[in-house]
Image (cartoon, rainbow, N blue to C red; front, side, top):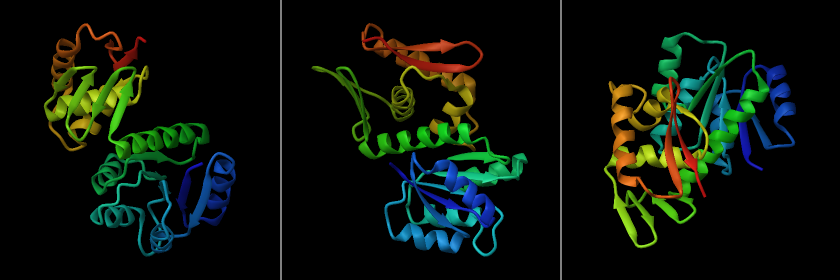
Length: 223
């Protein structure tokens, strides 16, 4: 089970979230950003769920402090602030996901699982699909004796798709993850890179990149 740190100044909300997440995860609690840093420094935290509006060190500052120290722990901001400016500030601070209250705990569970999986893959630095291995250290994709070295963005895009086999990734999610939230790249950029990947891996039997019209793309695992 993963260690989930909940940072929330509302005692009732802390109790509710803890009750809903226990059983699937180990839950750690903090009432504000300062206490969260103390808990985090003890080690072993796999994911943080934090409120924004808290006394002292708020959620934005907490994430900025962690990222400034090079910490890559996944963070979900959970808050009643749903304006685009608030979301932009949260993502700019370095948060990985953003949910608004009231909490849909089923959806929160999905998001936790996705971030934990992404974090594990990132730490391992490689994805294996059958005989295909995508290695983040070398930006190479190998299959037996075949080796394909990819440019940075092409590799990151393929790595992302293979990290979530058979799952649809929206164009917006791909843009935010590969090109960055503040990038001026658009859907045409994604389409161009998808076409390049298809050309390079045409005929590889392990996977196929499929367009989900109007939504995004997915890597379909074929064997």
